[in-house]
Length: 276
Image (cartoon, rainbow, N blue to C red; front, side, top):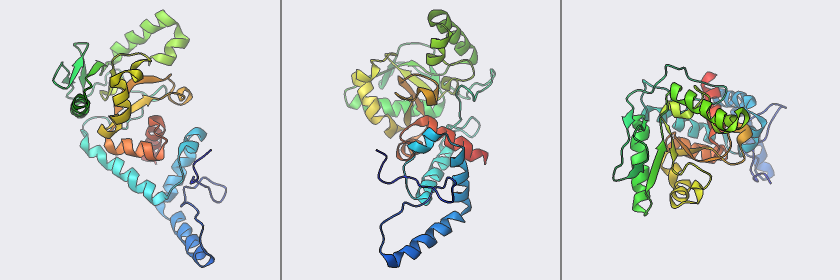
């Protein structure tokens, strides 16, 4: 059943309004006045407009709440963009099967990963944007202190690398299956330099000590699971329990609180918000 507090709509249009509360008769007028004030707030009007663009599944995933609280949380996320390089793509850049980057895009100032005191790598050509590189170290150090050593299997991938990888999986599994498990060139989060795959890259990762620890704690360090189970129709990809994207702590909190912890819903919302 849907949460007991959920978004409700007014005037036959989608509206993110304050949760209706059981009030005594003398407080009902004040409640109605509060709603009227909210409906004249430019940001709430914008919020309603943006929500109207979202898919029905995304709308259903958003719990009811106070729109002013939602907007306050949203602006914390937008302000957290300052923690990332202003000379590169936003950490909330929407990239998926229909939103792309060009063949010439490469993140600036990529940092090479090597085996270190915090984590292991199983390839010698791994790199991340500086923000993700430092966040990974903090995440892995915390895991290490809990007796878990994480291994990194994949990070930044160039357009050409992704093209070759996709073509390989087409040959191995056929086009239909490859589309479920591998991104075409220009559509992969890996090209942003903010995503990584933990090892082992298979469906058993979430059952390993590292997988269990990451699932419980990754968001505390700004890492978000990109392709959750049961959302292939939303993300375009089957469940990938090993694939995480660095979006920052504020965005992880926002995603969990307002978007049922589904990264795609939140990123699509922020993209739509920024376009208004």
